Amino acid sequence: MNSGAVSRMTKTLKVLFDGTVFRPSGPVDLEAGKNYTITVQLSTENSDVDADPAYDIASLAVDTHISDLAAEHDHYLYGSPKRDTHEQ
Image (tube, rainbow, N blue to C red; front, top):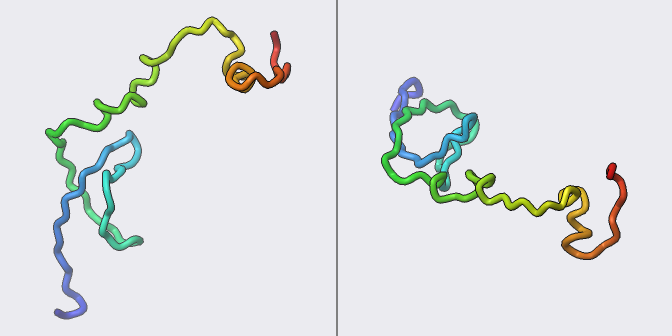
């Protein structure tokens, strides 16, 4: 092969597009620092997004009626003294 020849290879990678970046679902056997061209095809398989409750976290929320729960979570979880660093 001469030094001017272009090597052609095709690889299929399963990825999730998070709105900014394509995230591979497994190891990627490609050389870092090289430029690649990606052809995008919508997968007909069930997406992990549908199965992952973190993508619909708001549906898991429970109203505890504790207004300072976020700021004082250590107090409510472990019984440590309240920090009193927030307004009442």
